[in-house]
Length: 133
Image (cartoon, rainbow, N blue to C red; front, side, top):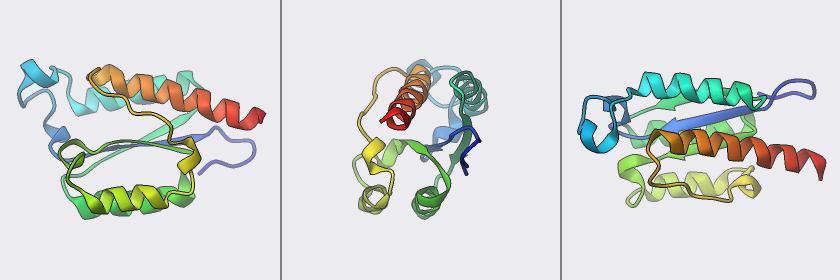
């Protein structure tokens, strides 16, 4: 989605049941809703000079299709596969096909919603370094 003079585009993919954040086991997952987290992600991305798009699905196939779309449309991808973290060969295979695999350099876990903001800031830094090289 990014052109020569445009801001970089970043895609954040949320896996199954994350649409229930703020309602489901709030003492464990926090009280923020996915909509609130998405708004904060977009604000953080804008502050880093990027445009963020978010996507959530409870369906593995929809997540795989969005990853395929990302190959041609985004400068960076952040994914929280949620329940599919350890079980989805299809999502793993789709991620391996991403042409932006050289940007995939880290895993962030255990920070709740702040982990998303950390990932956005890290992606912005990596994209800036890539442009300088």
